[in-house]
Image 1 (tube, rainbow over the protein chains, first blue to last red):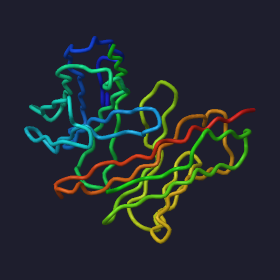
Image 2 (cartoon, chains in turn green, yellow):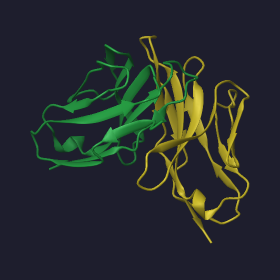
Image 3 (cartoon, rainbow over the protein chains, first blue to last red):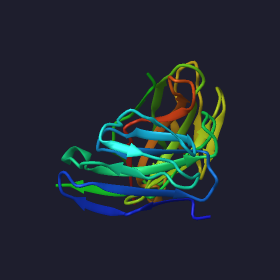
Image 4 (cartoon, rainbow over the protein chains, first blue to last red):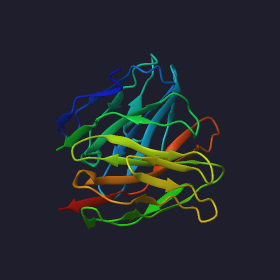
Length: 114
Length: 116
């Protein structure tokens, strides 16, 4: 198993550009989520999905869209990048949606918006 | 809402010293508690977890006990190594207010530096 994979590893954007961060898992996990990591703030939930076709907002959803057309993939779209979106983005997945399940994280995408 | 507070870093220890990283939480219901570790340039790896009160999670010499009465989940290791140098995150997984799923809430992380 490759686990949770993310591409790209690093990206530089100009303000106003759009892009998609890719996330895939090969563990047949039901639950997938996106977090951003900023210095001194831990990780914050952007969006999550409890299964194909079902998505919902987390704590900091503004400026981001998601979709879940398959169990394996959960891309994160930045519609019009802003410098405030400079961050490290982590995708995570777990077998189930409830508290006792462990979430497994991808290696992250480092995004710089100029 | 849910929150996690962990001790500020950095924590600097000599090899073979005893480690404690404090973590306390506030949450409704019955969350699960986790410690994740992040090595430089890498993603988060699960270190250990506990899913109910009085459970002890352990892995690679690290331990933490889920204390409901003190709302704490302190991380300990009896003898640290240079290879333990990393950032450690305490987290809880609790029910989202819609009741349809759960989410992780993280502390801000504690950087551990172990020297020879």
